[in-house]
Amino acid sequence: MRMAAVSPCGCQPEGSGELAANVCVMPTDKPRKTEHAGSAEDGATSPARTLRMGMNAFAKPPEEYLEYAVRHGLEHIEIDLIKDHSSLVSFRETRILRLAHDSDDARVSLSLHLPYTKNFSSRNPITRWRNASYMRQCAVLAGRLGASHLTVHMGRVSGFPVWPWMRLQAIEGLLTTLRKVLPVCQHHGVRIALENAASHASSKEVASLGDCVEDFLYVFEREQSPWLSLCLDIGHANTNSGPLRFIETLGHKIIAVHCHDNMGAGDEHLGIGEGTVCWRECGNALLRINYSGPYILECFKEAPHEAAQQLHDAIVPE
Image (cartoon, rainbow, N blue to C red):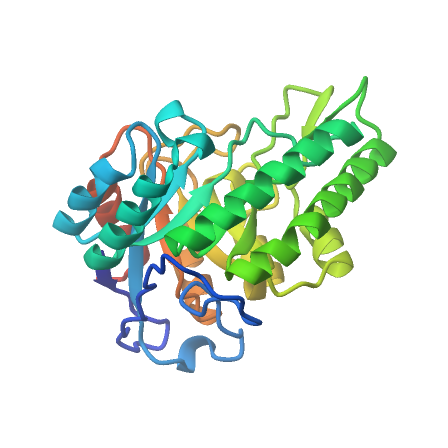
């Protein structure tokens, strides 16, 4: 949904390019350019832009959402691979070709959301090997669909309690997995976007990796591949470090944004404006870094196009 945003200096936004889906993806040395953030220096003096609204295909197959997206001006669909109707093995040759063609024809860009249930930071080497193999297959599928990126949760670590050395060991396990997958991503022109996690203060025995800015600083310092980036989940960030700190610290890595609200204590996926997220400030901060990727709505009760309008009203000054 191309909706105008206004910068703090009163600039009028201007549209960004579309991602064209390609069935055959040739090796490339540079990530696709339609989903990346600009530099912070561009900030308030950058040309005006528009908000690229998107949605998550979770409850139904992505094919059933394409017409809806076009009808309501949504420009991106993130395919969640957790359900049987959209699992990795459900994508056979005919389906891949048809979805790549239809999304390209509809001018709707795609991304894949890997199941959050998979622990890509597992300390078990066999589990880690299997998960790396799964992620590589997802990268190949994304390339064939013309998808821009894989959205990946960093994983979790358990202990009684979870000691800092356990968390560090798990992050190193994640890095091992990523280094086995990133060459495949480069070959197929697909980025990995690590998603920040919500905090779960009620549990001291399980910790979600990626629930603080420091986890990402550690990962990005040790793996500087241009194919590794960040999916900023604003709702998740509202339960820990805060979305503004993520944007100010890691803005150059953000290629996708998930949008939903909460009261700051749990991952509630409320409608935009129903919680404590500072949406206007987040919008201004993303504008300052010249962010041009999709805003993917993940509100449980609102239809995506309704949530998109709520987000527009919350971010854009009247």
